[in-house]
Amino acid sequence: MEKRVSKTVFKAKACEFLRHVETLGETVIVTDRGEPTVEIRPYRRLQKSPLDVLRASIVHFNGLDEQPVAGEATATGIESGE
Image (cartoon, rainbow, N blue to C red):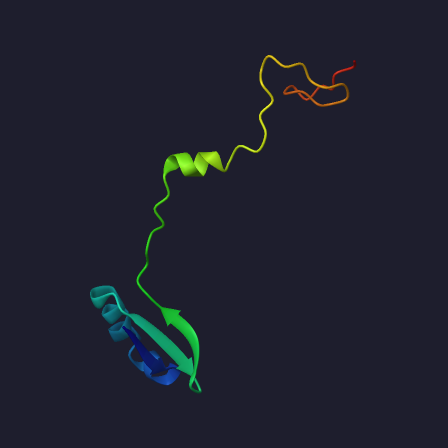
């Protein structure tokens, strides 16, 4: 359930509305001239598994046994001269 209030009313009772959102978990929509402008809702932490975070972090891995391609920089930053 959401509650709609004008910007003027929200300004006068901001602490009351913030407590309302915290305790009841309901969303408050602040309007300006009848148009919604701001949504205030309880914070929900995104739950990502550590493996999902790591999966997206590796773009390319060149195996340690492989020889670098000629003209390509190595891990030491020195280009191979083949």
